[in-house]
Image 1: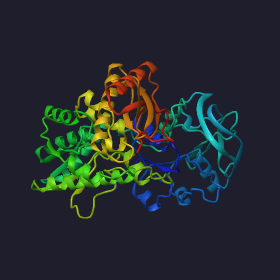
Image 2: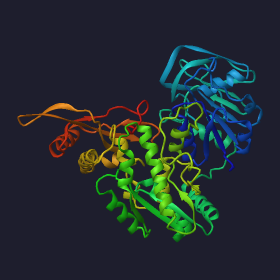
Image 3: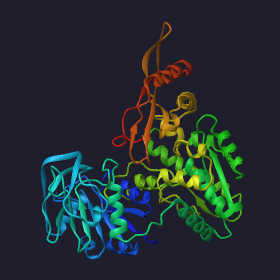
Image 4: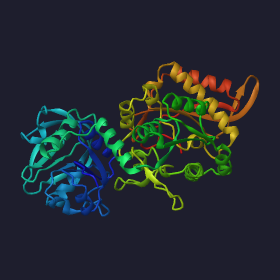
Length: 511
């Protein structure tokens, strides 16, 4: 197991990923593990410091998420954030009670002590509070180093043991100098070196792939999306013609997707094998409306198709996938108490009957880091800037059963939406945009005739890594053109709506 400078123990906060990302963006590698990770596994990772994240629970509750107290005996620097602060107080002899007034939003941090963790931090800077409990009594050996109007213990420290805690969230952008505080913890207090960069990551992965593959071959599933394009390019750099890139037309792709993908890889000098398995996928999806079943069927069928293709080539022992850190988090709940949101077709390993060994070079990085890696590898910006497209494709953008007629309706509507988004200049300003066919019919009027047709939903969001997202505030005149064109040009749709929900509580995709 590799050395991890900063280990983040997750108690279920919606901001946990931001802690790791802020550290990485500053050059310090960090990973997230569940709050109940065993002490032995923590020791195996050889961290130089530990961060205890925030969380939605109360540390004094009967079903509280409690860390193994032995982490305080490791002699490592520790930083507790919100629930993490309350955890420190609870275990080390202090006390935590419900706050008289819940504190959410901006607050001014008054620095009460010239602590190392506040190096180069201005007094009275804005920090972001989000808590309903508060520390009432400090543990022995701790002192107050920061206060706010409503938090007499906004920041505390035990310098001798190098244990620090904030009631606020330094990881969110609303905390003006929060990232600098995290850097002070990693660099000055933990003694970590700034050695995390996409250039270094690329070199490490190329060497790792070379060592792992040797003279064997790697089957790589590509879709033309950012993730698979980056994986294929990374593999091509590492192993050259030992890469066998396969593009599966599953019948669930957008309009002109097959031709676009083939052209893109031809321009990169990567020989792409295209397999048309659309009939196979659609046959298996017939009569299936449950979204989890659809995802699992698609994932299983992908593997079957790849296995069949692999048997046509000698020496293939590996299967490469574009699994991201966010896929892992959402699928297998690596984040402590977080619940599985939805399964991802490329997460969770291979079935027993399949003898390939997995290669997942992107498994430890976020989506925006994948884009950065792609640029590092020399991929063109227009390819890197493509919006995410899910592995299950349009199947999870059609509510209910998937059939060819609905796929054609959705393709036409989606094409119009994307045309208008690009023409308006908003495509590059947003994270992801797509159309959903709701399979909800309503009455309409076209000409003098009554209609009873389907409803399309436009979903456009802004995000950084996909873990959280807000709906994009697209000008109404642009949405109006999209709606008018879809209703006028696509038979079977007489109503268009716009999704204004954010993630959380909604997910980006509808299924």
